Image (cartoon, rainbow, N blue to C red; front, side):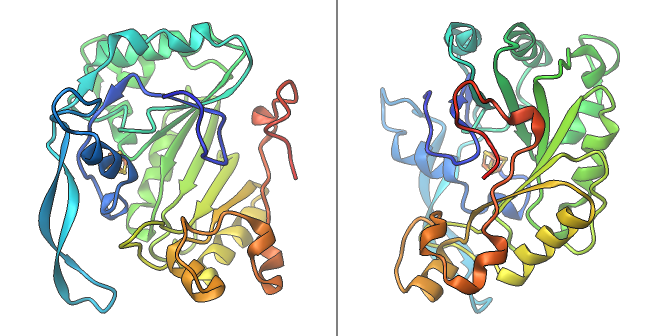
Length: 293
Ligand code: SF4
């Protein structure tokens, strides 16, 4: 997979596939759903996910039986993809591992190092690393003495990001701050499924925020997004509103869609959150795709 429709990047780079849930933000994982659809024999996600019946709470909290995509727990490393960004001549924002979590425990340290070496060698690109498992970077490694992050190159064109879907996981922000070698840090506050509360954004340059999309999407209250925006403004962090999510889309626009990504469709009273700012490190004027609006 190369080009992408994700608003905050140009390309995805997927040198590995497969994952497992780590927190509530994973409940209706987009990658898991895609993997389950293409999991038949000979297909690209064969053996990595399947559709299963699971008991899950509905909007009223009552449990209901749903047929949902479910990872099998297997991880597949794609050797042929490891060097791929070296062949992309045009500078791009590159999202590493949109279909998994690069710091899943079954991804060998040596493989992670090779991905970081590829990023190190491609300074024409900006790499957006995003994980729900940043604590792995602070753990010992078989690459040598010290912590995993201390054995990886951290050039200025690599951004370390973590996903923060609600207050329960804001500790991940402290964890990426503890990766002191990283030159740039960002947050994906998506799907925002609960209020974040007060967060310390020191050392964070960019926050992407959005609701959940999909058939079983949970609601993102507009007030939660406004509160994230307020804190970004107060702490001078670039804010990027991605989408309202499927529930708000139904309430405000009266239709099902992928979460209402187009600002033109948002009601006028949401003018204050129609913001898509980029941090300076991601403003690639060469390709005209990532500039402040
Ligand atoms: S960590 Fe990411 S890819 Fe893995 S299950 Fe959670 S949302 Fe999906």
